[in-house]
Amino acid sequence: MLSDLLTRRTVLAAFCMAGLSLAACEKKAEDTPADPKAGATNKPAPSDKPAGTLRVGFSQIGAESDWRRANTESIKGEAEKRGIELVFADAQQKQENQIKAIRSFIQQKVDVIAFSPVVETGWEPVLKEVKESGIPVILTDRAVDVSDQSLFVTFIGADFVEEGRRAANWVVKSTGGKAMVAELQGTPGSAPAIDRKKGFEEVIKAHPDIKIIKSQSGEFTRAKGKEVMETFLKSSEGSQINVLYAHNDDMALGAIQAIEEAGKKPGVDITIVSIDGVRAAFEAMVAGKLNCTVECNPLLGPQLFDAVEALSAKKSIEKRIVTKEGVFEQAQAAEAIKTRQY
Ligand code: AHR
Image: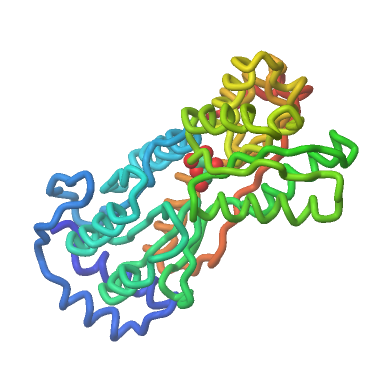
């Protein structure tokens, strides 16, 4: 088994600082079964980590976008750099796979469970099981909608509502407050789809001549972004669309193809703003096909493992750790692309 009792007690004590009583935590630690058999989505091999090495179970959503791939690399790379054992499970966009992985992490008695929840709701039962086990939970990238905030220690990630506001403010500025907007939403029920819509609508409320005339999910992927944009353009309102707001760069990049195939000029006939700031979006801006990208930083590995190590050292950590991000326009793209890390 990977955790020696001392390491386990240290992490448990830190979790207790975040909500559980130490006695309850220690009791749970002793009660936890020794050797789990159930597998996560990607069944991890049994490990012989040296005593004292931290072991973290991480359930990733999948690989739907360039952002997600950069996020996975950041987490894997940082764990390796710090000598932390990472038990990684790819949920392939399914909440049920994430729940299975989390249960498997409990059985394996990892020191910390971290995950990026595919959707916001439906986590309460499994998070209660984790709490019972005494293992601390860190949320990265996306939030969960739970009434009991003690079910997780911290949430590390961007402010998605603010990203939506930033995108809308840019639309207001660049259109003079007059636009017929098509919106490509992210995965239904996911925090970024809900919040980016909310932030955008909050700002445009004060601008009655900015109207969202088409809105549908493109599931955060290029293929679906292209497909949905094609249907938007073919619809009866298609010819009126002069702004595209995409909840991520990948969908905007797919939509750019659809716009070109429809004989229009992306970035000119249709002004495009999206979110993430991945390298391909900068390339599209340099090519004049995308007008603005609102940054959402996927490089969360360092902050995640800072939190893991802080927990292990019994240091207190913030309940909410917000990542810092900017907004990039075409004019800045050629210079900014030189230092883009993802
Ligand atoms: O949760 C972050 C979002 O998920 C990114 O904006 C998107 O590209 C990803 O798939």
